[in-house]
Amino acid sequence: MSDQTPRYKRILLKVSGEALMGGDAYGINRQTITEIVAEIKTVVDLGVQVGVVIGGGNIFRGVAPAATGMDRAQADYIGMMATVMNGLALHDAMRAAGMNSRVQSALNIEQVVEPYIRGKAIRYLEQGRTVIFAAGTGNPFFTTDTAAALRGAEIGAEIVLKATKVDGIYSEDPKKNQQAVRYDRISFDESIAKNLAVMDATAFALCRDQKLPINVFSIFKAGALKRVTLGEQEGTLVYC
Image (tube, rainbow, N blue to C red; front, side, top):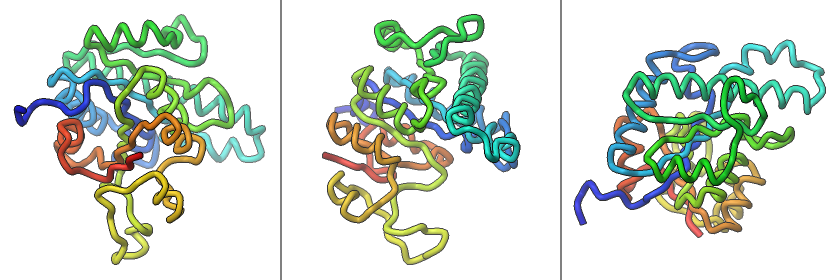
């Protein structure tokens, strides 16, 4: 097998909205989103089919003070709209990088983005287009982690890659305890037993039930996404 032969043919990449902030307090840092897209492009250039679920925390953080006391469902819909904005920004950055992508929204906003249609999304992936899934699941009370697990299962992804600011899963918060141990591999059952916060409970249970492995890694570590896709040791793999 060639060193550049991907281990996975189709992946679901979860990128948090906070990752787009870079060093800013909120919003989208153009340099950061350009660097993230460059990392994704290295994988697409290998022939890997990539679906992306994007969060909205970077935008919602800016309106969070006004959401204090707001009805939870209403606040969640605001968060979903934030993911659509991030999806459009990601799409534009991909266009600038010479990539072919599509944005599909779980909420109906056809003047701006097309609605999520599973069969259409799969066709886009088969055509080599990166598909950005926005607006979460389209339902309040569900996180974008759950959206990532759901879309990953629906499109037949072989793995969910959770891109974060840390380089894997630790026994404790490494910022609070420098003696915290990072796991290279850990099973779903062991993760539950150790009460490790890999994803929210709904997302984690869905991945476990669908036998969909999860790899947690740092999107800010150059080449990390490509190494994960090639099957190299990077971050933490949660396996069945």
